[in-house]
Image (cartoon, rainbow, N blue to C red; front, side, top):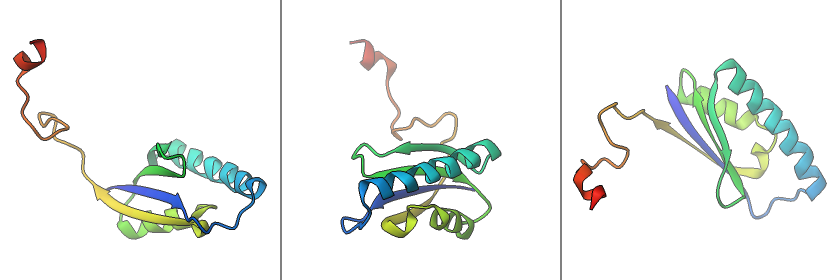
Amino acid sequence: MRYLVIGCLRESCPLSPAEYLTLAIREWETVLRWLVDGRALAYGRLGTGTGAAIVLDVGSEAEARRLAESLPLAPYAEMRVRAVEPLARDEPATGLRLDPRAAAS
């Protein structure tokens, strides 16, 4: 099953910039291993610049939470884990049926 994990650093994060960078590099290395072995399907920084999102493909929510909590920056972050399902091939991402003629006008 797929899970979306969103982590955002807490405002009270006590890390210095150097400490943060050291942990961030370790976290990137960890997530890259997950991408290679198939546990992670996607990883990226949030538009706010204060967090990241990972799509995990694992057997349970408990496993997704365990992986999220094992990340080096996890002790300093608020983490959310949500189950996600892929859209059906014929279902638009918006959930609306769009009229292709409307886009041409």
